[in-house]
Image 1 (cartoon, rainbow, N blue to C red):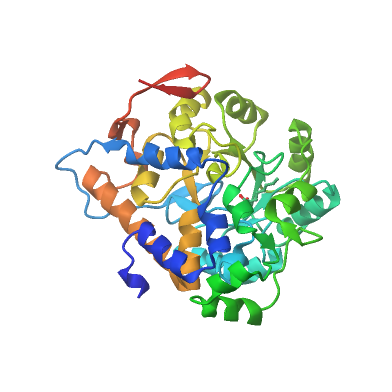
Image 2 (image 1 turned 30 degrees about the vertical axis):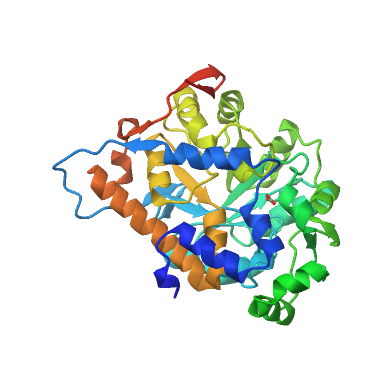
Length: 389
Ligand code: HOC
């Protein structure tokens, strides 16, 4: 039945039907008025492609090199928190699907499968680890050491979370870890008995980091995360981590340039899927400004709002070296566990191949800024931000 899903939006529809409302909304939702997420989607929808004609495009090569290793596709799986609450296979499904597709998988500090469990699910392929620096530094540092020992090749240090964004859907739903049985939860469970059966009969969530559970997501996160992290922490982490170091959550040109000057291996332009500061700049809009400043050889990646392979192709054309998918992966997971994640990757792969072939390019390296314009014309107002005209 998952084969009937032709788009990520189709997978989202199935996911919504199969998943308890609070868990679905945690994934689907964003912060405050959800403006950043909505704007990120609209920025991708605004893309106009400019194809070349009469170019050989029978064999489209979607592979690339990223952070010292190969990827069969120009995207990897982004770190996601509390993943086994969405569907009990969780990170195991994500990591094994990534392995089968030849793309990197990222485990979040707030993941619900251990570092070693992810390694077992993806023993040969590329695993990346996403780091939050917590008040209890020894927890974060311990995770860094374990990820290195397990052969994870890249660390994504996330910097856009000094405090939790206001996820209003979570508050309205009373979303808590672990889930509480309330009248509303019970009524919502009636059409979704299999989700509850799976949840109650599989091993308990294995948090990589949280020493305690019990509370709303916002409460848990604010209790755990350190709001005082700074560039000094970057130095400390650089000293501890033997692999590639990426900073995720960069939101302006000046920070991007500073990080590249400091010699980080890559940056991810991200506003955390619109889940932190609402009305933050849209990473896809920021992308050309950052690439212009740091140069096209720097490893600039992008996430937030990617729901179609064409979004990925447009990002690569504007200078991104790679992209990350969060919600698109989780919709597949919630729709059908490992098979659902396979379906997400297959949909994005065919959209990427089709978009490239119709553009008249046969490799990612042939994509150029001239292939993309945006229907809404923007003028820069300051430091990479844009104004609509
Ligand atoms: C204060 C820390 O990535 C999400 C997760 C966790 C956010 C951490 C906030 O829900 O987006």
